[in-house]
Image (cartoon, rainbow, N blue to C red; front, side, top):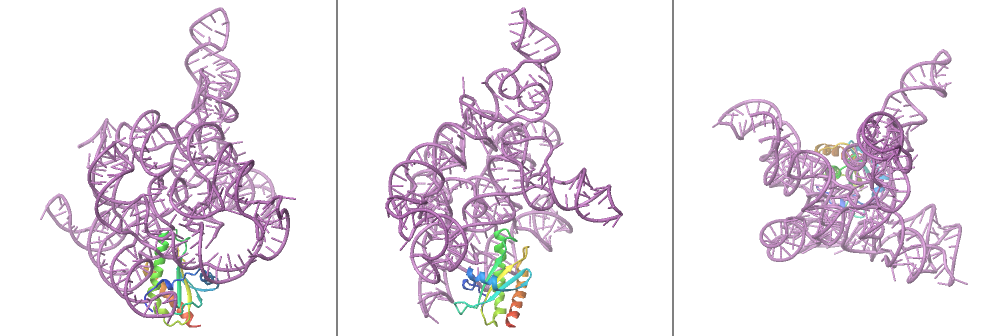
Length: 126
RNA sequence: CAAGUAGAUCGCCUUAUCGCUGUCUCGAUUUGUCGGGAUGGAGGAAAGUCCGAACACCAGAGUGCAAUCAUAGUGGCUAACGGCCAUCCACCGCAAGGUGAGGAAAAGUGCAACAGAAAGAAUGUACAGGUUAAGCUGUAGUGAAAUCAGGUAAACUCUAUGAGGUGCAAUGUCAUGUAUACUAACGCUUGAGCGCUGCACGUGCGAUGUUAGAGGGUAGACAGCUAAAGUUUGCUGGUAACAGUAAACGUAGAUAAAUGAUAAGGAUUAAAGCUUUCGGGCUUUGAUACAGAAUUCGGCUUACAGAUUUGCUUAAACA
RNA sequence: GGGGAUGUAGCUCAGCUGGCUAGAGCGUCCCGAUGGCAUCGGGAAGGUCGUGGGUUCGAGUCCCAUCUUCUCCA
């Protein structure tokens, strides 16, 4: 797995997202929180579909929201291969930023590693 | 020089690595896509959604009257506008300049707390003048306004002009899925009702009907979708807004929503320190705003670190 | 993307056609009553009327701009 994050790996289906939030489980590493759900995709080559989200309530301006989402995507892109290579089943993921203050790439990167590590450990122990 | 005033322009840059996305093209392909190459990829406000349009639909958006809403000196510009330009008047400012919802009170209705004799119909008190006599005349006092048929229209209203409604979540095609089902009322060609404010007329639709209730399903793709009342420069006309003309340019299209992250260097600037040939230079630590396209344009309004630049004004005081 | 509403005391709300010092309930504080607590009675404090302009003699109220919060739509 490479350091890419193309369109096909994005979580877009509204139906799937509703299912994810109603049935999925969550783990968190403040200020990040991940909701995940084991599922199957039509395309067998894709094992993960991931979305990121930032609350409009905590960040009023679109610029701030977009910036944090970009940081989240960037951190996810750079770190996913390290943790996901030994996971065999398929998952839909949603990563939320639940903090209320701004942040920078270093802290997001560190927390993303914690989060993905915890997720990997939890999933492979099943 | 300083203070002020009215504009105009810009609004961090470069390189490397890893990524995102549109278009073109070559190759592969299980027709879902994948890989290589080339080339594009946020703003002056993209924002607020306050106006005006384009465009699309509403069973033909029809006519008249009314209601509602908007605008309001005069003249011009514009596709249009509540925008812009010029100008008159009023107010503010020493001035440059700024602000103005600036039509009508002899069409009518209403309103004016407190104070005051009196706020639309009555003239009181004191003083002075004056007369045959008389609120007949002036002044004082209350108040924002006090004798004149006044003020108030960002009170109703009148006048003039304008406005059909809904908005790209419009709309069309395809795919998936379901309930032309259920309940109530009315009606079935002698017409229920509908055509997005009301009434009248006209006209059209109408039985697999209309209205209401409760409920079921989908929520994916493609088109719309980016070349446009376009931008820049010059010339001509015009006080100007603007118009005409010539040349050049060819300018984002995402959809849980692209335009980013990291590193290095530079630029501007603040503070502190060192230094100086008083122009400045060096080092350290910071700072670099407001803000992210969502159908597209023209405006308005609001937010904004800092930088560049042009015109104009300056009474008094100080140098 | 496009509509609609809201903001007044710590909380929940009034305030009608502009007019004197902006009210009510709950809550807070003080006093009384009780051996004490609650209930009860009396009194007090507490307001940039979201913000900034304008109209007017005078604005919570009328007009304009702006901010906050809530809500509807396929």
